Amino acid sequence: MNDENPDDGRQTSLFADADVPRRVLIKEQRRDEVVDPTAGTPRKGRRKARSAPDGNGDAGGADDASAESPATRPRKPAARGKTKAHELAEKQREISVSEFFAKNRHLLGFDSKRKALLTTVKEAVDNALDACEEAEILPDVTVRIEPVPKVEDRFRVIVGDNGPGIVPEQIDNVFARLLYGSKFHRLRQSRGQQGIGISAAGMYGQMTTGAPTIIKSRIGKGHDALDVALRIDTSKNMPVKPRPPKVFEWDREHGTEVTIELEAEFRRGKGSVDDYLGQVAIANPHVQMTYWPPDLAPGAPPTVYERATKSLPVQAREIQPHPHGVELGFLMKMMKDTESTRLAAFLHADFSRVSTRVARDICAKARLDPAARVKSLGHEAAEALYKAINDTKLMAPPTDCVSPIGEDLIRKGLQKEIGEADFFVSRTRAPAVYRGNPFQIEVGCALGGSLPADEPVRLMRFANRVPLLYQGGGCAITKALLDVDWRSYGLSQPKDSMPVGPVIFMVHVASAWVPFTSESKEAVASYLEILKEIKLALQECGRQMQIHLRRRARIEDELKKRGYIDKYIPHIGEALQEMLGLKEPEKEQVVSKLRETLEKSRKLG
Ligand SMILES: Nc1ncnc2c1ncn2[C@@H]1O[C@H](COP(=O)(O)OP(=O)(O)OP(=O)(O)O)[C@@H](O)[C@H]1O
Ligand SMILES: [Mg+2]
Image 1 (cartoon, rainbow, N blue to C red):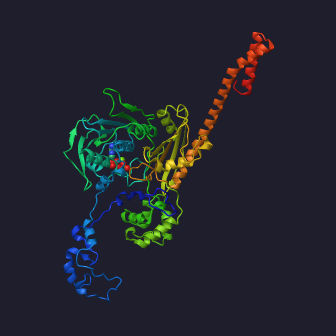
Image 2: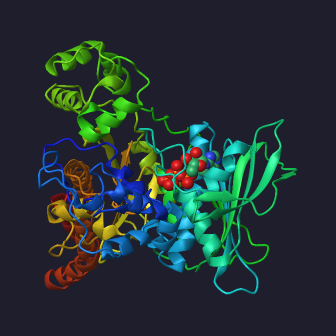
Image 3: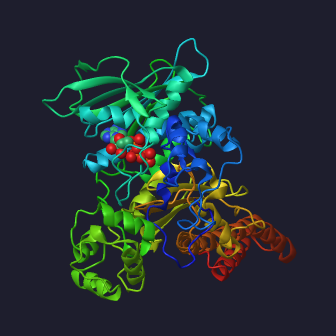
């Protein structure tokens, strides 16, 4: 995925980020079917092919010059023995997606023991919140991190929710199969989008401790609560059950609890589990979380993040892809996979913002029959259709597939979690579009109070309500913040650096598809449209901040001057008394007159 904006005016795929599985080399050749590049015949049947007089092999060197030009005729092998290419060909084999990510665990956020703990908690909590919201349940999430006795750097992470639970037939695939999930194929804001998160956490646990993932789940009254243990067979990317599932008594009517044992390190501070949960509470004021850290003294109460509102966020609606965000290859795939029969119906049903009239217009521009069978159309027709789509003016995509936090709740969230500040502003921008994908930017800002005035500001980044704690440098949010000239808003700012001042910024990117820079979902890619919207939102907050800072500076200045009056006027009174021989009441009168005049002129009265 590009870090820089690749948008050069050409349409790119809504699903370009679906590159994840495509990166994995998949060869379908079996060893015994390796194609001989010199003979043009499978090696297994080479001898036979050589003697075949059909010209496909190199039988007896009988060149059929009339049938093939020298340029297209397969060449004779240089030598009869194995070539280097044969040797290399023998090493080709399929790589399962689990093997790939097991080897490249850093791509998924498991590059250190400390980060592994955070990523595991994060994947489980994100899923819990997604599931609750989808089922319209106010989330009540528990996070417990227990040290495994007598083993250094080993912990058990247990995350529970009061969500809808998972149907028994799907538990195995959800927790022990990479690239399996309900969110990848839809266009709608959610925390998860790739179908990798929780199974990758389980796989990391399995690789570092050998322990299986344990899932408890119940889908409602009248249904059994199940306790399932799972491992991943990494060479097949398939679930394996080390023991049969158990039915057990659960006081919870519905919900899920996942336990992962893993090698990890627990440390507080920036980028820690504590940091993450605190930030989740800011961006998700409707969530209640209870947290038992591993170093909690016996009998000590857990940390509770109380919810600030009982209203669930407005449900984001699933939309169809916008035609202007779709590449030719993807259009061809859609034409192949569609359930519609006729071309015009396909355009209307499978895309957003294509009415039946617009569908007919597109067909006319492409010189295609609206009643043509979509699946019978070839490459040329698809090209014509693609061109016609991009030559047609269309409404921007619908934006109800994103659900912002809202200005009020951002302020509430900040006030709740950042008690040391004394001024809060927030701004939610109108939705905008990048590469056919709707997105919306929100900025909150906590200022003043006892926040340190001589340190760089703190920036909290969020994507679809999830705190992003790593790779800040490569993130569009940081870039946009650095791009604002903060000196004009009353903060000092060393060149190319974070501004300095008593401020905490939070920036939220909400989108039906967040363009992350990698599978670990830690930084947002720098699309021009996204950068621009973030910058505008920050500047709007900056102006509010500046008004507040100016007012505060004026008050401070006046208070300082009042201090001078209090300090020096009595001395002036005494000096006048001595010089003019005033009596005590006369001196008092002069002092009070002086004070009154000064306060009036400074408007302090
Ligand atoms: N606690 C849960 N309750 C209900 N369903 C869940 C829960 N956890 C996971 N799921 C289901 O399992 C699927 C796979 O989860 P996973 O975290 O692997 O992928 P994802 O959330 O879809 O995407 P991402 O990889 O970006 O996290 C989810 O799409 C969801 O349907
Ligand atoms: Mg997930």
